[in-house]
Image (cartoon, rainbow, N blue to C red; front, side, top):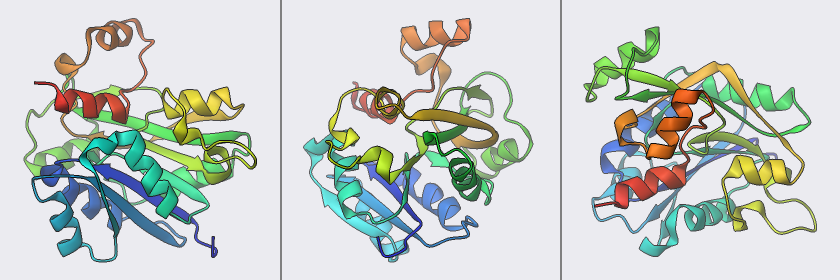
Length: 238
């Protein structure tokens, strides 16, 4: 691995309106160890790849095919990465607090039994109000509705994973399996925890736009945050 501490893996498709704020906050993070950012662009037609290449030349940009999907794009990003820890990050997630990434690393360091740790996602566009600094960030960006709702559960939209958990020695890499990353990791015997003191904004997560099943689970208090796959599927829907 060459001593690289962290690889941030982002898969995009027609994310020109999102990738700029995402990378701006990410590159402003105080990580405290060596880091690389890998962006796999799955055949975007809106100039997403050109934005990344033009504004962030330090980012490792991989050109994927339109049909790769999130899972295939993640596999490409993993193959191109070298970090001991892997941060899966959706392009519509903003890490407002510059200490968030370091906090995720510290959380995983402190939990040897955990294969991954996540954070609280504050969903822009829901009911309620985003707390403090996050609300101010939403207003400053001029993003859609000013309401926000907190969603719980470990989400693939922002998940810090151990490399040895994602690709165990002598076994198939977990990104080749079905289901969500948290489910796959738990199935392989790893713990997955949420660090509630850490939070981020996820843009465009209108509660009314979620599948009915997720809305019912959220009302009953059993909901998990929507996965990157669900976000991608919702974008493709007519």
